[in-house]
Length: 344
Image 1: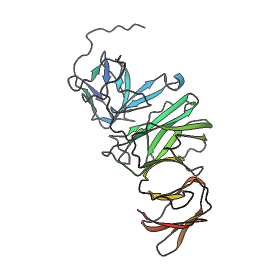
Image 2: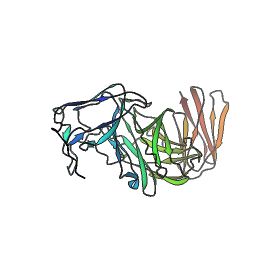
Image 3: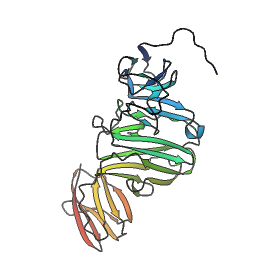
Image 4: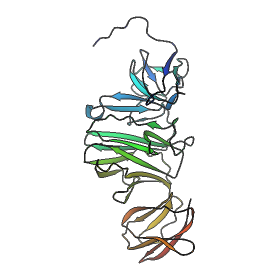
């Protein structure tokens, strides 16, 4: 198809109005005859939520289509670049009524889009992890990474809301910030942190969750995937794939990603390398030797508040107790071990 345009093409600075009504989504477009580099400092994004743009890519999900998103530093799914092709439409969400401004003399916002590789690609941090949910050839990704300027709650200036493609056969994945915000890019302020994950899929299917691109995470940070329905805990540093049966009738979130500093743990004293630790209202245990016994939580006055049997492999137990100091004990054939924990 050949398109004919009348008049002179845009070449100077441009200001595009951004509205702030209803769902705060604005459909904008690249007004130039060349690509627009969304990572350029010449694009003023003060009115844009999380500085993020969204482009519909009809080639995603085996040609069913889906959204690519980029916040000027990194994007999802993997391979998404900051370049908006000439005359390409894209979405943004607004923080307030304002403008998207383009200053062509500041940091080269206008680029050619035929480059074999991308120059000056900037990442905010190497501390990140990508999670992919897949079924056959269909997949979707969510991205979580660390920036000390953010918080572990929802930050409209940092966190990017999820745009759903709404295809019945496409499982989609997101992280949750509170009960209201479903995110495709979630920026945390630091560790420890627990991030609920959500799956949107209309069918009952065997799905696979894959973790990748986390080589930049510090060695002392453990990354664990909890499945509360199966009471299981998966160490994603050791096992990058986790398959599970998705049931759309059970819509509550049952997957949680935990980040915690495990470097302080002492060497396990048990011969079969049993170990246990506490982090952010959860007790974690690793029992590769399938040692039999019990764990129990005591108050400082000696009252047993909670007791449960040791489980094989990795497991997690949630706590809901007032702030204070408690004693966690393990009783097994190898003896008794106790640790003092502080719940805040």
